[in-house]
Length: 264
Image (tube, rainbow, N blue to C red; front, top):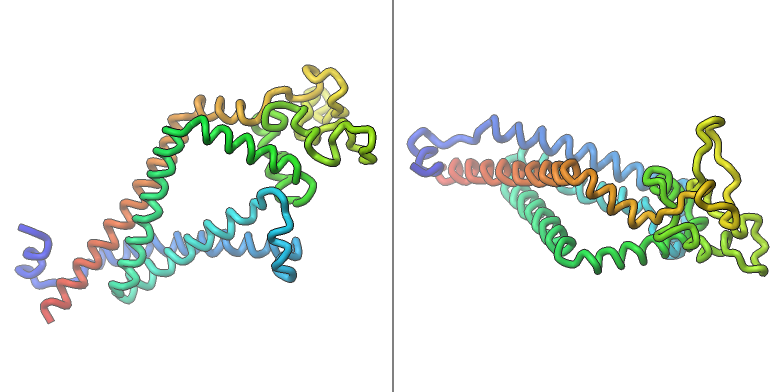
């Protein structure tokens, strides 16, 4: 017996369990989206971007705030549609929620397959992305913090090695460079002295093996992925299951609402 026939025999009604489970699922989604969006807008306000929108295009590298704005915006819209759709039993909002969430799931799946098939191309793009952001290191404080975190976490320096920092106008080793950071690298490239827990002086002309992380971040990131493949795969599978769960709840609720309306 199909779900629709069962509802007709029983006396069609909207499942409170499905309704409020979907509402609870989306209220968390909505609040997280609002938090991400708020953090992103606050970061832009601190940098003066909101008072001068044209400055968004001035940064040569990647602005990490975009992650908060885009992810937060999508989560906020989806959460809002799911919350109001479930609470008001609005099939239009529920369908929008399930279709949009399904589209995101499909895009994630497609991206994962393409990344596996075109691994070499992805690696080239990652090299280009890192080198492009190395050049813009001093242009944005959030980008600088992101690069410093990555280099400290993966114990690396540059895309392929310390010499990549020669592309940055503040660190390059040309004689015409007036910067006091000339021929150096960021402190996040420097090996910590375990005795004093401070950074040593970082200069690419010094003994790199002793003072500077010599491995590139692309290679270290690949190694980290291989070492943590099960954890990374588990996270992606968990996210995918949550998305499928949300879609199923929304579709079940839409089915209940239609069955109730059909008996009016």
